[in-house]
Image (cartoon, rainbow, N blue to C red; front, side):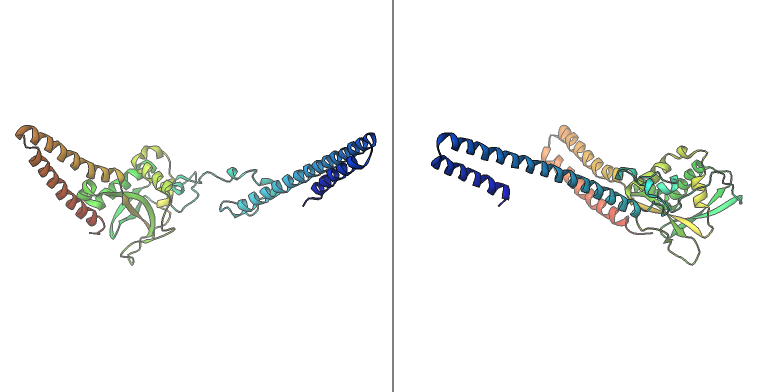
Length: 295
């Protein structure tokens, strides 16, 4: 029990005893004095609580600053020579821009030179799709836009016309691999997987190569070493899967409606449409299995 609470109870008990034993004037004065003392004690207690709460707020703020400092030092982009004055005021200040666009797209090279000049006329870049590969001849006069367009053509060449139009998978990312002839299947360099945001950036650059016009960042990264090549890493493409599923279903529904209108046989029309949908489902499963097979 709190001593202040005990003191209040004792004050009330004392006042009751005084009211029973003393004359009217004296006992009321003593009771009034007791209550005044109680109020003063509560005021001192409230002031003490206020001081303690202010001290506690200061301790919490210092702990928050120490936590921010620890997280800042553990961040991978933090320099070991940073001083205490450079620490951020909040965790929102930790983020830094990517050092280059290829690095933002998942390639393991951070910095690119602004005054890059190639020392070669034609650079042979070995591009893999699984065990299949082709050589892309990069010319010194290209910029990143021309390089990205040629990368798209090389990928279409590797996956052939059949896979280009009927495969449910498409390029997800580009990984650096060892291009020496001792590796029958490409051996990747760097992390096994990339974040979805980096994959989306790379696909955006491949779809919109004009965004990299007159830049030479991808040129520097992909031609930095002759013993390295690239691999087109594929993933499922949601738009193709949606078209492959919805289009035959809608086609079978239209066929059932037309058959019913022409021949007046609703049951037979939807039986035919159901058979078509079932047969197509089997073909779709087979197509999905073939997408896992490298050939």
